[in-house]
Length: 230
Ligand code: CDP
Image (cartoon, rainbow, N blue to C red; front, side, top):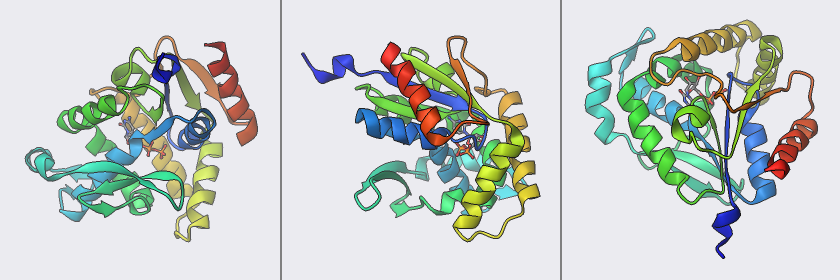
C-alpha cells in the first residue's frame, strides 16, 4: 500500500498574524508533510505589483494586473540551509522581501482580484494532489481543499497578534511602530472578511483554535491531538 493512502490534508485558516504559518511549519516537520504558506504567494504577486507600479496609493490597477498575470511566475523552492520552502518570483528568491510591512499594507486588495485567486488556487490544488500537505491561508478549508480531512480556524486577540508581529519585524531590523502594525492587522482582517471573492470565514467543519494564551508548544500539541483523532 502506498504511504499516500494514510496521508491527509491539513487546512489552517484564520486571522492575520496569529501564528498560522508557525504552527503549520511545525506540524509539517513532525509529520514529514509539505508545508505551503499560501499567503506568501499573494504577497509575491503584491511585490510584483509594487515593483511595476500597478498599485498607487493603495489602489490596484486591476486591468493592468490582469494583463500582467502571464508574466508573473510564483513557485516554491526548497532552501537546504533553512529547511524551508522559499518563495520565488520570476527566478528571484523573495522570501525576505515579501514580509516587509509595505507588502502587508498592499496585499489584501491584490488578493481580492478574482483572476489572481484563480491562478494561485490552481497552483495550490496541484501541490496538494498527493496529500501529505499542511497549507495555511484564508480560504484553504473553504475553497482550495473543501474536502481536507482536518480544518483548523486560528485566531487570537488583536493586541496579542500585533505584539507578535511587531516583535518579529523589529527582530529582523525593520523600523515599524506597534500602532501601524495593529492598524494593518485590523484593516487586513476587515478587508479579507468582507471581500466578495473567497472571503475569510470559518469552514463549517473547522475546529477553532484561539491561541491568545497558548505557548508554541501548547498549540502544537493541540493540533497534533486533532491529527491523532483522525
Ligand atoms: O502572515 P499573515 O497573517 O500576516 O498573512 P499571510 O498569510 O501572509 O497573508 C497575507 C494576505 O494574503 C492576507 O491578508 C490575505 O489578504 C491574502 N491571502 C488570501 O487572500 N488567501 C490566502 N489563502 C492567503 C492569504
